[in-house]
Length: 248
Image (cartoon, rainbow, N blue to C red):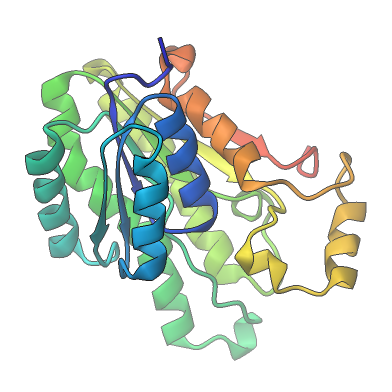
């Protein structure tokens, strides 16, 4: 039997990148997949088809994760379409990097709203569902910079630190109902976002990593499988670093 057979997973911001890798990995382990992104265009539709080709039910939903009302509406629609939600992965995220003295209020607000408020929105909408089911796994996608900080990323670091605090608090609130909440803190992961960096910059990053390479979205997805499945049935309130030893 596959690790997530019969379960339904909701993954935010999953049309591409790490979110897509997690969705594909979950589907390969038997999970039905509902995913959201700001727009479900050609990329989102292609992702939907790629996941469905693995033999599971899959549907993408256009939704602004930072909008409280939209989030509750899309969760209601997913429940109508799938009947249950067993796993939530709060993956939606953006960066708007700048030194504090140059950072605009808009840059701060946009990152906090998309990265952190979206997680609150989805946990708020899904908590009653998982409480009725008396089971569930919630995974917040944090970052090593949410633990250690990073110059020029005060907004992003603060949002990712918030994801850790949110996960730990929810683990304590929801544990008695059989709901587990954890966070993953990826390090330098090779995605479209980091792929825009020069080779020189990527090589400098690699020198700081004990394993001497950047991670892949699949490296993160493998950790997410552990946290979503019953393999981690006694793991809650934890932060798992997927960083090649960078943050030790």
